[in-house]
Amino acid sequence: MPNRLQVLNSGSLLTAAAVKYLCDITPATTKMSVGTGLAAWDIQSPVPQPAVEQSTLITPLADVALVVAYLDPLGLVSATPTTTLRFTGTFAIGVANGTIREIGVKISNLLYGLVNLAGASAIVKPAGGADYVLTRNIIIRF
Image 1 (cartoon, rainbow, N blue to C red):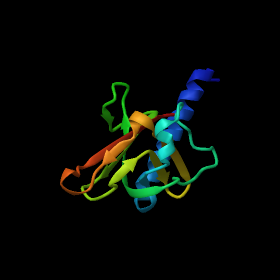
Image 2 (image 1 turned 90 degrees about the vertical axis):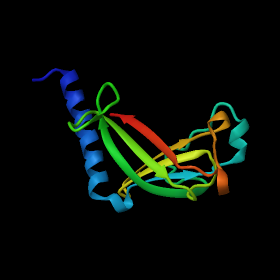
Image 3 (image 1 turned 180 degrees about the vertical axis):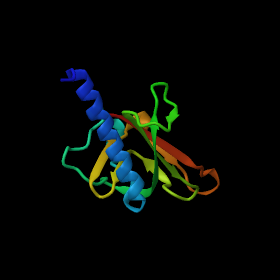
Image 4 (image 1 turned 120 degrees about the horizontal axis):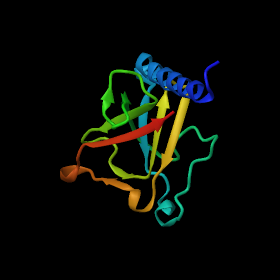
């Protein structure tokens, strides 16, 4: 019988591979979403976290397709499955303009993970001549 550490590592690798597989086969429903959240979050400490049962952003602003990659222990992209995934969303000029305080990752209508940002973490993406491309990465270790 393998030791407990081997079983846990194998389970983590299997979970990461299953999540990446879902992302790869359902690109139309696999998205990174951003929202404006609540302005009150800018002065709250600690940052409020989404409820466990929350499955949507409070104030959605935009969503884009995800690029999902395995990362090796050095944080470099790996062609070989690992227990670490990087989810990347790129919001082009004219997309997601406003103050961004929440980010969500939706995978194949099955899994939804949310992150609330507040205070110094809020991102302002202006419209017009000052607009820019915004890329966000969320890294999950299984």
